[in-house]
Image 1 (tube, rainbow, N blue to C red):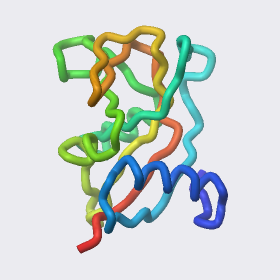
Image 2 (image 1 turned 90 degrees about the horizontal axis):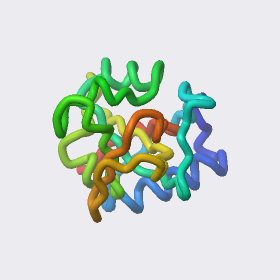
Image 3 (image 1 turned 30 degrees about the horizontal axis):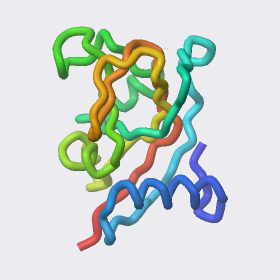
Image 4 (image 1 turned 90 degrees about the vertical axis):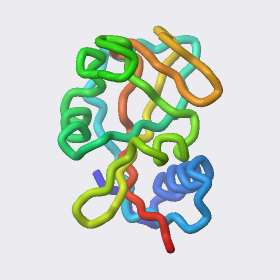
Amino acid sequence: GVLHKSDEQFEAVGAYFLLRLGAANAVIHSIERLTPSIGHRFKTGSSNRIMFHGCKCLENEARIIRGGFQVSECVSGGRNYGTWFAYAAAYSDSGFAFNDHKGIRHMFLCVVSDAQVVMDNPTMRVVGQDCAYPLWLVKYTHGH
């Protein structure tokens, strides 16, 4: 559910998000803790990390919340290539996070394993099916 701004988890997730976004004037409007739909299918590797994923539209966001990341739905890199995640929120914010009808941007913070890495570089990691799940959905704006 939606975290209250006084909640320790809101403070910790929000601080990490803002740090990795690197935008001094950004304002977080809400953070929602998601229930992973992937459950027992998650392929944990030798390490898991928090990474960022932006969607191009509300429909994609809703689909990910309902059914997790589906490699078969990915188009970047070619059919069934993998799901892309950024190490820094700033990268996802730069062209992958969308603005809703109120002008509020949406971005997932995700748990990403190294169980099946398709590509990894200093900017992003691409992983196979069931190697990531969204844990928080942050809604934010950039101040003026």
